[in-house]
Image (cartoon, rainbow, N blue to C red):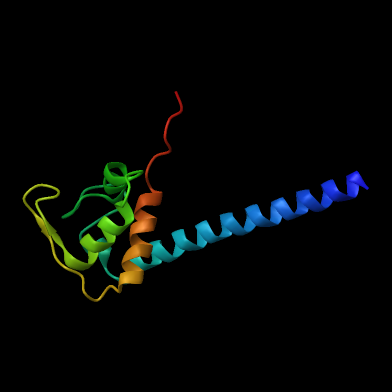
Length: 117
């Protein structure tokens, strides 16, 4: 009986974990796709500077901070000034609030993993 319960519990845990990982991968894929579709790559690159900062630098600066996703989504839609030097980011009103959050989540997913002491 115990073996049967353990097997069921193990399968359930694997299913839950698989679903969680799949959702993360889908969000990453959707965010990455939106970055291409919304022409973010005209000013930004993943890991090198262009007109705007690289996405990895944005992730490193804001990753792990409370409210980072909302802050970045707001910056995407409304633009911003003097956050990365003298250049301003133009507002992107064609990006819906939901899309801005997907993009922000994807950018934040690029942050390096925290080192354990």
